[in-house]
Image (cartoon, rainbow, N blue to C red; front, side, top):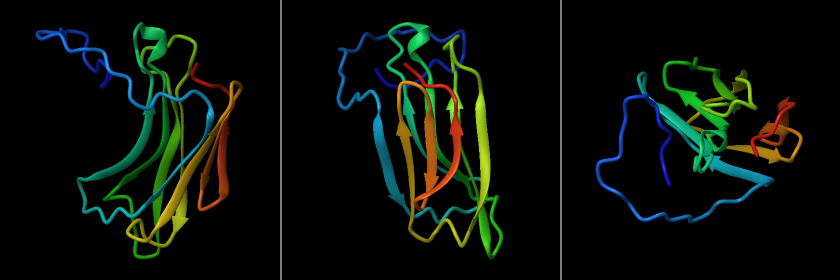
Length: 134
């Protein structure tokens, strides 16, 4: 498994063996991340579906930080749930202004339950998506 189908015309030209490494369902997931990003760069932590069929393609975006979305005192972090090809999900992306720099160490986390996903930065709740990729 691996990447999402990001264009409808894509096709497999060389079969690969199915390999599932770490494929959890539900729990708390976090990353301590420093991202000293110049404009044009992105730092991110995503959890993607296995996509054996389209309904398994939902994504939990724990954090996305773009190099051009920062000031000397703060930066934007984006987070949320993306349906990709999952018809049971709706796009629910949000953003928050975080004090400091993305180059400083920050902890981005989610609590993923069968009913919702809670997003935190440095332990502070930034938002709750009232849906959950299955």
